[in-house]
Amino acid sequence: MLKSMSTKGALTATTSVAALGLVALVILPKGGDVFDLPKSGPDSVEETTVAEPQRTETLDDRSQLEGDATASQNFGLGTNQDTDAAAGLRGQVASENAPVPTESLAEPVMEPAITATDSATVGQLSEQRSPQALTRQRVDQEIVQSESFVPSPSRDIVAPTEPNTEAFSNEAPNPLKIASEEPVSTFSIDVDTASYSVLRSSLTNGYLPDPNSVRVEEMVNYFPYAYPAPDGDHPFSQTVTVTPTPWNDGTQLVHIGIQGELPAIDDRPPLNLVFLIDTSGSMGQPDKLPLLIQSFRLMVSELRPEDQVAIVTYAGSAGLVLEPTPASERDTILGALSRLSAGGSTAGQAGLQQAYSVAENMAEDGEVNRVILATDGDFNVGISDPEQLKTYIENKRESGTYLSVLGFGRGNLDDATMQTLAQNGNGTAAYIDTLSEAQKVLVDQLSGALFPIANDVKIQVEFNPAQIAEYRLIGYETRALRREDFNNDKVDAGEIGAGHSVTAIYEITPVGSDAVLTDTLRYAEAPASDGSDELGFLKLRYKTPGEDTSQLIETPIIAGMGQANEDTRFATAIAGFGQLLRGTDYLGDWSYQDAITLANSAKGDDPYGYRAEAVTLMRLADSLSDN
Image (cartoon, rainbow, N blue to C red; front, side):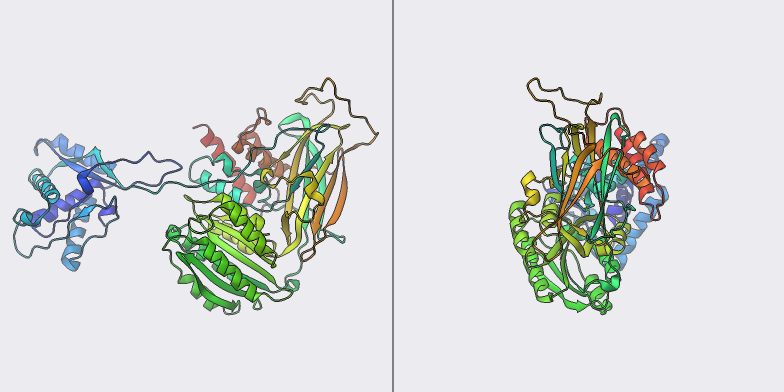
């Protein structure tokens, strides 16, 4: 209760209590030291302040009393509120005679509450008090005598806070490549969306995101696009469009769009899910475990009767909270979720081991098995090294059980660990910052998140040096592959889920363009023209789930190929937005306002408001970048 009062209100309450002889409560830090935290910012949290009082010179100075009222208002309470606070404190002591709950500052010295049953003053009880309590008692008595005080900002005592330990996994932005020297670009597809949700959380909380948290491909792939559905033998279609670049008149953009097929719900196999839930002490905040429970409740409502759910938790030691249970027993599953609580250290490795063991026991031929890890990303006990976790997850995925990761909350988000787990577990990584995001990931896109239609999907583009002088891939820095990895079916790559779409964008500079940034080498031979109008050649490889041998799809890239539409323009706006947040040398004078204009013109059909929200985030970034 004291914590919710202003400084003035708390001390007014203390004055009233001392005068009535009802109770004396003293809280001082050990040694009486006064300390301050750094100023608030994106890496800090709200401070709790308890101010020491100072005596005033006189009771009769009415201007001083007016100054007291102003100071009280500055601390959030008026005179009436102070009186109410004091009355509330007296009422609590009289009715409950219990100590007032407090938060630990730095193991404060706390005197027990003392209840006086007669008219004895606080001074008569002082011989039972510590020296620190006696000091505070004398101050309280002086306050009673003066009945007027002002808070002293220089004497504020501020509660210590846990440091921000967030760390993000990223690589330097892709450099410009010279087509005559390095014509081939190879990478794994990526359907994760965590980066977009993280930057949204940052911007809506009033600060620009950490540049390392920005992965442009995850921003672009956050949005659904109306690419043509597959109509052949392959489980996905590919669409290529060549358009002008909005930030550079001398270059062009090559959009590669992939659209996965969406089987009918009745045709999908039974689903076995193990919820691996972090219930460590760090998960106690409202945007962590409480939001997690709400999110899984949404997901459970989408499961079919033949699906199964088990729940494993980890917090100090792993535990099986819910045995494999048919989704038809919804009340049993929701009851197990509602009983979860946060507390303990984080032992992620033990939880992973038990979750995989449960999943393997649930597995049946033809069924889909998935472990869904939900955490704030902090693995501080067990296998915490990303490389060791990578090896462990790689060994487990061969059993046919995939791993997806859902991140919750901010402050200790370990992005490197989350990315390692999801990428090597043949799963996806998403960050849940709102219940609306849970609806998108766990309800609207449930099939894509849990039912793979193509494994180890790789993209390779060979650019024609006779037509293209330079190129660069926008995003996918953490998904880069070696040229020889494309044909090596032992090399892992990303998965495409049912109904998923994937977009990749190259910026290319034609031969002879004024936008060419590099000089021709003195001793290099000029690329010979073969008379072809091909700008490049696109190749895709994928494996059908359960197969070990990949299949190949090939498509030439022709100048003027495809037609720009709202999808390609909006994807371009998001790609530009991501580069502005990340920092780049290739956008020239192109600005947030340019991204806003382009995105607004390409919102098109936006039934859930995702594109409108992106424009709002662009505006926030524009304003914050000026401060």
